[in-house]
Length: 573
Image: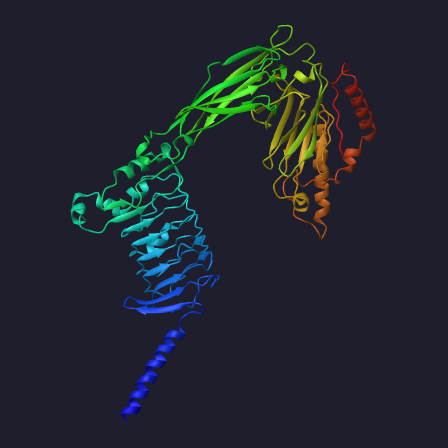
């Protein structure tokens, strides 16, 4: 009888041991000690994702080198007793904000050697008992001000070997643990308590004014908060690279201030000139030169540092000539604001006379320029814009520039864009639907006048043409030009624009009336975008013979600039 009982006990224990062993995952090992059961998975690429069938009695899980990329929502809900979670050397890039849900007993989380660029810090609201957080060797570049808000009991935080550049001192001043340690009473209570270790070394610290508060915080640290490596090093800017935090003195940030020693420069043609400006700012600003005439040439631009807060920008213009005259602007920008200074360059002609007609400085036009005929046309229609081209018979085309006036037709003041010599096209984009615009081309600084403008109206966003060809209709009112417009657009001359528009509207209404009786009628939207390219053939061809005569007369005027340009013409393609 005793033998039978003994055998039964052996069978029970063997069965229980086998059951426990059978609950371990394939490719992993399960270990049990006085701290509880542990799941250890070290096999290369054992899982493509966090396994869902983890035994629910685990207190420690260690899964490494499995190369999964995400900690999904409720990944460890089935293991509420989990205390230690090691997921080092995987490819984790995303942690769901509820990825740590149900881990109220978790005290240690190690995510070393992953690819995290950011962490959902609110996820730690589900881990109030967390004491150790290891995030070293990731790609973190941002630490929000309230990152440590839900980590009140943390005693070890490792953010070393990441890509942190600038963080605020408020990150730690908002830390509940740090706030407690600031009171005298708490200091006395915690005087013999455990130290709090911070590892912040080997990051790309950018030691400019934005890091001033953090550097001061690091210098003020005293036990029980200690740094694992107290020699934090600057990675930038270049003149501070390699210096320790305790060696740099950072000042408050300031908006750029740009100045130039010479605001007006006059030189003879063929001379080399270097334009200079000084930009003082904290942090370092981005500095660049712009030229009002919009000419793209191979000018050499360089920068040199004067002191820690000042940069000198140099613009070298070799062998200046008449086309280089104008206003050059040096601009500096940082995150606080921007500043600029203008330098006026005048070029003397070989006969010793000075150039004139600089952008932004009205002057009298050359003899014969006042009545120069500008032929302007629409060359291309895009989804949200148009491109125009123009031609002008000029005596000095290499020295003559233009001004584009563009804006809503009813706007009192329009945007002005200076176009340099040799350029005869311009594109307008990001047009608003159902809006009337006007675009004019004038010589130099002349004001816009009849005969040099196009007025056009964009259709609404949703039209049959847009659904079919992803284009919007544009109704164009042409003022004194030969106009080429894309298919699906309408043109009316100035002389007949009102009758033309009335005819378009009448034709549209008739077409709407016809379509209303058809079974395949489609809902139309808007006034102008209801028009079809072929819906107005009678209107366009009504006086076709007369139009051809007008076009021939227009061609004659283009080849004979001294003829009268007052007649208005239009051509529809």
